[in-house]
Image (cartoon, rainbow, N blue to C red; front, side, top):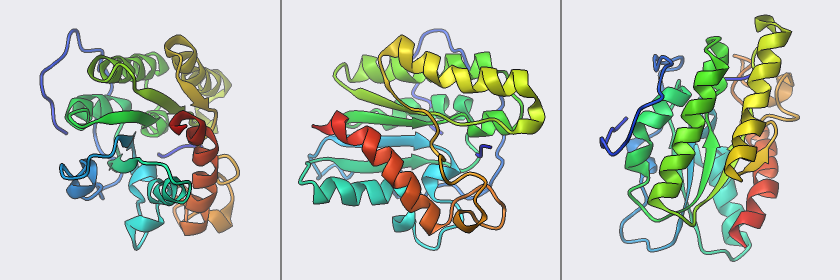
Length: 224
């Protein structure tokens, strides 16, 4: 199960091959996509889809990136979360806008892309190349940046071969780049009616709290 820009021109050959048409129509508020220039804290960028943006929630503070910020603050760590979630974004769309997000002091990139690629049955090899290129650009702009790759699952109706290959992309990307892997972002949430909105795809506030638990467990060591 899965759900689920600016182009600076600073790039070499572009691996983008998948569509960036939107599945959902509620992008994150633009102000949430960049850190306040007056805030000197290093940034944790969440580059993602409507899952990251908090689609369907009454308040963006209920989405898991904001809940992770609360964990960071409670732990006394000096980082600021920037929510770079855009509803309907594919890995191609995320790649097209990553350069703009990197124009700030990025310490950690949390990469939550691929769910919409899976919903549309797009080529897992294109997904892999797009994710690798996002990480390459992040490391080129911020050599010390750490990366957390959030894995997703493809819809089962696409067949065993596709879903297995799709799942494997995230581990391969993490292995090839030395990134940390969170195997499945929606572990314990996907398929649970009480933790999802009526569409069966986007988590409720309670679901976002479960997601935040998973993300924090993987992210905290990268912030120490």
